[in-house]
Image 1 (cartoon, rainbow, N blue to C red):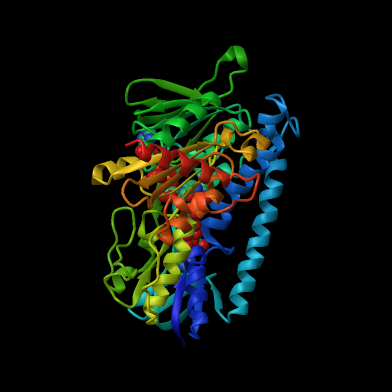
Image 2 (cartoon, helix red, strand yellow):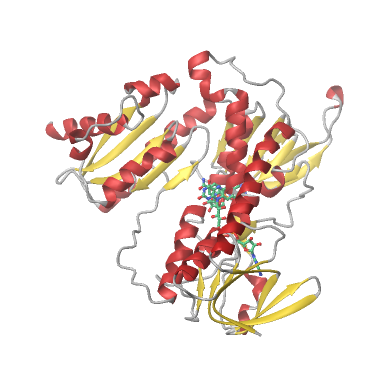
Length: 469
Ligand SMILES: Cc1cc2nc3c(=O)[nH]c(=O)nc-3n(C[C@H](O)[C@H](O)[C@H](O)COP(=O)(O)OP(=O)(O)OC[C@H]3O[C@@H](n4cnc5c(N)ncnc54)[C@H](O)[C@@H]3O)c2cc1C
Ligand SMILES: NC(=O)c1ccc[n+]([C@@H]2O[C@H](COP(=O)([O-])OP(=O)(O)OC[C@H]3O[C@@H](n4cnc5c(N)ncnc54)[C@H](O)[C@@H]3O)[C@@H](O)[C@H]2O)c1
């Protein structure tokens, strides 16, 4: 039986980076994967496919250039699923090769099969009816999540589906109800609407993406409505059925969503995106003495240790924020702790990137959080219309907001909506991490013309307001 210093379960972002970190520390490492492909949800069903789809849609529809060339501008008419899938498959294949190569280069044993704990240090790997046993000093559980699929939703993979199935649609529907205005529902609602699909987005809470700064949410919701998306906010879907279509228009079956308020919505298809569910139940964790919650998520301490100290967990399996970006870093930090690497310099300022149309990103605190905490701040705002690059791109609605401490002018939060928002945010993140102030953006020269200049405009705006207090 082979023995390892570390065994990692799952090849998603958390598992990959944890395994590589351990190998860099000179440890003997194995990584287990139960699927037939590497990369987890990030590469195969989540981050990369959805972003590849988005890029293809923005390019082929000509959406990104309509601000310059007019609303009727198109790169390709009659876009098909095949057009969109081609880009995605190409990127995914490249990512598989990259991961495999990284694991090999770092001397990590890749073992295909389903992992199951037989004891605190003993793991069984099942593959095609065979079983292999191995032991390890430490474990990193990075098994991720899957879409929640309640039994009362009539999933049929063609007209009622979850986010994994959306990627396998055979043709573009004319209309779609999206249930759940979280990140997945919102991103796909935008992508579909950009393709010309009639979208109704139903969200149980009174606003989309409740963790964002209110001003950004307001701007975003306004833009979604302008893009033709019907928002049903503060409304919960109670029941989903298939119903007969209108005989006068061919009678194709439709999906009907009945809301708690009694409203009935109908469309050709329905995407169910109300959150994700863990997969810990199948891991044999009771043989180790580890319990999980009702959504099969694990509880960890600040060092990513479960209640059994040699078993660590990272990524979606531990819950919020459930991002590929944070999962990678959690996996790495868990392994650093497991092998005694000092953690003093680890930053906890995590950014968020939402690849809706338009893009949204944030780092630090929102106006609402600062107000609640009683921290005095001023907001400095720049619209993309105020910087030359914004005009060159034809983005007339983009905006960057800096939240500046009233007394010491440090940056407390950065919020952006518009082209390249997810890239732009990292400038603010760096200044915040290095404890810089709004003056940084005024005292330094920026390339011209860039969207980054919006930082300078926002800083002037905020500091000018502060002078008048
Ligand atoms: C539609 C969508 C879009 C997203 N977009 C973004 C985005 O733009 N940016 C972002 O940062 N995040 C995004 N995310 C979130 C991101 O995909 C996840 O946070 C990330 O994949 C979590 O990584 P992980 O390593 O925890 O788990 P996963 O990526 O889920 O990987 C877990 C792996 O463990 C394997 N596994 C499970 N059980 C076992 C077992 N018993 N034995 C062996 N192997 C096992 C699984 O097969 C899987 O390969 C998106 C998610 C979705 C669904
Ligand atoms: N760009 C990104 O970083 C990105 C993109 C996609 C997904 N993700 C990650 O994937 C995870 C899962 O995303 P998600 O959107 O599925 O889950 P979520 O939990 O973020 O959102 C689900 C939403 O559905 C709503 N809801 C629940 N029941 C409802 C009902 N019956 N009717 C109407 N609305 C209802 C909830 O109020 C909630 O807003 C998230 O944690 C997210 O971080 C990240």
